[in-house]
Image (cartoon, one colour):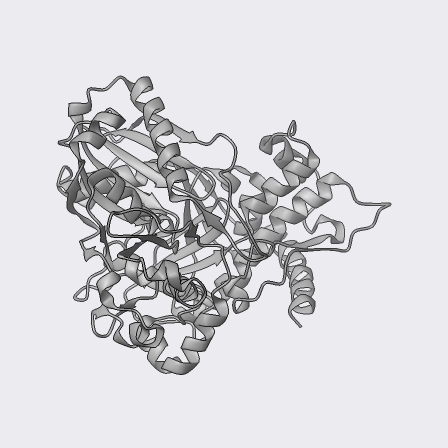
Length: 494
């Protein structure tokens, strides 16, 4: 039997087909081949058309089915990973009302800050585990205040993965994990947050049916199955936000385990069984994929918006003929600290780790007589790593202490400079595995459908590809470079 994983990102949609018996990925594809369009009508805004996700999913799935030549009847179930915090609104006919306000849109930050004051900091932090901030509920409040005619049409709201599941099955559903990432779940009451919905003036009727993260959630409609080349017997049996799913893909499910990813944005995600939070909500706590009220599993998430997007921006400036591998080689030619060049990677919207401030990116210490492209490329990778370090120091106060960090060998973790710098400045061992979000979602589908008897069985063939240990001899160099970078940050934030 086979399992499909859909990974709905903001840059692309990836589809992977996994052989359930041996866990191997037999085919994968992604669309578009260049980054998906993000529309910004104003500074700090970011929107995407949900139909764009669906269109690219169909293209990638067609490639996978053609390449693999599997019998659609042998595909057991589907798992969905998706970009977190996005707002999708539909009317009673399941039609999308407006473009999705996605994760990196910062227009609702002031709304969330106001609600934090009005509801009360202690009540928010002890029940929601976060400030309402710039998350999904605050985005919906922005629509209510600024586009009231559209808000009046709302039948249900969804996260991006819920939308894809609706397109597959016709069923509008969501999960506790998803509601928690939208800052709509009260962990004390184990229910929707009465205080937040009252403050924002929302009826709980707009929330879809809540289903377990791992479960036989729905079945593909026959007409959709025919359109996609799938069997109508295939089920949707798992969905999760991209960062909880990335943790799942690395078998990070228990307290003390830590996962990281460095795609368009960068994330460090640690699992805890204690209800702890950062009083300033600079790092955020959500329900993990295996959370329950009886057996808490909470994901503490550090997100840096400007990660791979900074690297991609430099690639465009340097010329499209320069590959990422060549960029990594050039970066490696420069010593630790980039000879005094520091780059703040905060150029992709308001950063939670900076109290929802949008300070923009900054390049410092450039000397036209000394520095060249290699220095900029290394300084960018160091700047991203140092922003991780800055946030991880905050995470320590919530009980997340990184000794070992697991990651898929992909995106910026393909760069030796990036990996060595992360290990060197944090003192953590980096373990790299043969997985990604779409493969993890496929495994999640196997758990949810009951194809796998246990989580252990689902991850039996997860293979460690490489281990990166901190270089003790270079510890002082990494620490000095970090302190130089932090001085630049302190000046920028005042």
